[in-house]
Amino acid sequence: MSHLTGAQRRRNVVYLMSFGDNLPLIRSLDQALPEGRELLVFYRPTQAAAARRLAAAGITVRPFRDGLKFVVTGIPVIMRARVVFCDNYYAFLGGLYHPKNLTIVQLWHAAGAIKRFGWEDPTTQDRSASDQRRFQAVYDHFDEYVVGAPAMGAVFHRSYRVPTTRMQLLGYPRSDRLRDDQWIERTRQRVYQVAPELSGHRVILYAPTYREGVTFTPPAGLAAALTADPTARVVVKLHPVLAAAATDLQRQLGRQVVVAETLSTGELLTVAETLVTDYSSVAFDYSLLPNAHSLLFYLFDLPSYTHNPGVQADLLDWLPSPALRNSQELAAAIVADRKTDLTQFNHRWNAANDGQATDRVVERYVGLVAPTRSADD
Image (tube, rainbow, N blue to C red):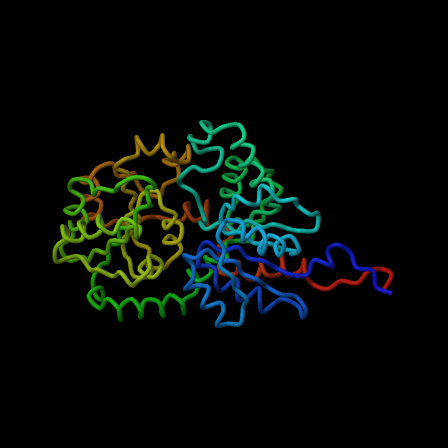
């Protein structure tokens, strides 16, 4: 007679999706699940296009918003799962009872951290005691944190006040494609097909972080700095809510600008010789690509940004190139076009992002839902 344990009764896997760049992992999980085990993806409405691609592969997907409907229809599914993957902070987790045989895994959406978050965010200290308890309840619900390097594990340890023993140095699955020569070549061909003006030119990509609640006004001299190399082509990728600012900056760039609205930042990274960014995690992705020549950090608002939302305390110690404080310094760096040595930067943040992270993640977590037999069988 078979006696099912709690782990055996929990058969399925749930993935909570706020970002659409982990689709290869999701497909690999689905394909690796043993017979009788199922994968369900709950996705934020902003990821409808990614969800359609998963559905086309036969994966069950459901949209979700925080609210009563999700409490009634979604939470029970999560509570019956064996493994739940999260690619973000999900506030509702803090109010759940956490069964012993449910493993909740944090698959963060960035390989490294420049900005502060969690307890390290200066604004957290200004929140009420009840808010702070609620935040910590969510952090504590993550049983394991998948990281690409010990440095990111240390950030979670400080920011979420969770034990370092919860860190799993498996690498970020979403980084595997950046080590895949075939994916890189296919992506480059798509970029050149959509934006043939980029082919044969030095491509300078300007991709700053989204400043929440801030109306982004391009600093004086930015357009002139980005076009300091007259032979280069410049692409601007601002957050979609900043469309007006992007249009204004593109107008200032004149004939050197290439408007590539249908191409993602990730796609454009594969053809960029120079990436100009600030506090964005896009830097950690770019540094893995073979075409990464110069990585420039244009930190024109560092004094104010340090206070809100804050940056990692040791940021200036590990940036791979000097912090550029004004447009004149940016222009000089673009003209100099020196190669950025990314060796130590990658050692710090991308140590396990070797192109095999998906295999390791799948092996670890599919193993938790694999059929087992009790001693009484």
